[in-house]
Length: 209
Ligand SMILES: [Mg+2]
Image 1: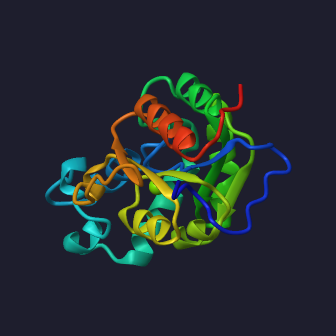
Image 2: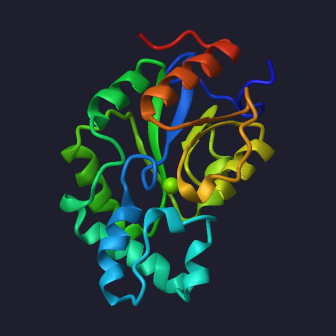
């Protein structure tokens, strides 16, 4: 009833299906694993993913913001060895595409788009369109009903704009409270598909199969 977007709805190219925005970094691609692999050798005390509590965890380790994001871009240069977050993304994203119209929606520097697209292809990710924006908060203004994302900052922006959020659990979003039906925390894309199906039903969508 309070479902999804409340302004400017435009259903013309996928009549009535739930519009799902699927993030890449931290949801499909385990970029932080690649970042650890790249930066730990130059560090006195190696970090692990469990040290990454909070969105700005890097600042506690003396890493500058600009350097951190440049390093993430550099991780994408090695796109063909960049690990997925879970084993069978092809199947998981296919399942998700049965629930609604799934677009890849990713915030990044333009130079990395080509590598990200190749990575999506390599892992047989099912999606309809590839949408990129310059900054995470800009996603919240896009016309989607459900956002699958790992960023606690984006999650807040989505909720503020009346969107539904499926938060993909990562150490850096551990403090975000689960608050169904608007924000549901999941630890796999299979769970994300289940949550999306419920959200789609709650918003009066019928699925796309
Ligand atoms: Mg992300």
